[in-house]
Length: 371
Image (spheres, rainbow, N blue to C red):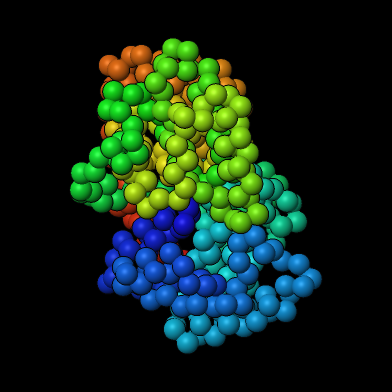
């Protein structure tokens, strides 16, 4: 699971059961299906559904056809009144099935880099398959309508929301002790899928610059590759850490379910995205934990991190800019605490699960109200 799946699960768990009954359809068993069932959400497996990374190619067309028929059957059998596709790629089938059954179609857009909406013809197709397009940030919405301006009336911004009760109610855990990190060592952490777009390599180069001033610096890189084919990126990162003399300073944790505990063990949280980041859930979580954050000035990140108020912004792909911002917060703990406090306040006012669910619920109701 990554941010998109955690956000979808949060939405389904918090919808008013007197108004909505969510049903999750996924292509296979896994963590999302398991967590959804644990939350009491009806979860159906549709093996023909096109998986992430599988793509729509000539050889997958028969499978996609079976998935479309399967979705149509599910919609009719369960009296579904809205189909909400959690990504544009899922919407090729979800939106088409909704059209076949004459029910409203919602597409959630959580990507900018390599999004189907970056193609004019795909954007127009997805426009025909949707009644409402939910963008996770203003930057994401701009990317949606850049190739298809006619979609402006359909595209709405709804920020991701966090359940602060879950974050605040976690049992205390000493993650530093588990990882063998001294309580006095300065620690920076980054969390997310391992991918060049997320900038973990830039973070390592920035850390190498910081080692002169902070010789006991430790770096936590939390996350794993989304696909097997991308596992070589971790190997490249590990080799880079050796090349930079950071082999003993970096901890690659792999995928962890206790990400919040690992983040809370750091002094500064860093999100070094290289390509336009639509909306980083991990940044919201760091702010909710009152952590000082450093992120790159790209995509929707400035909508979360106000430079100098709720965090510091650095330039993408610039290790020196990143190192200077991180070093500033490691040296000036009073400033770091102030930014962390302001960040928490921003999450409380703008990025709660209650605001997220309320906004989407109102949009669902409008779609269900006869015009």
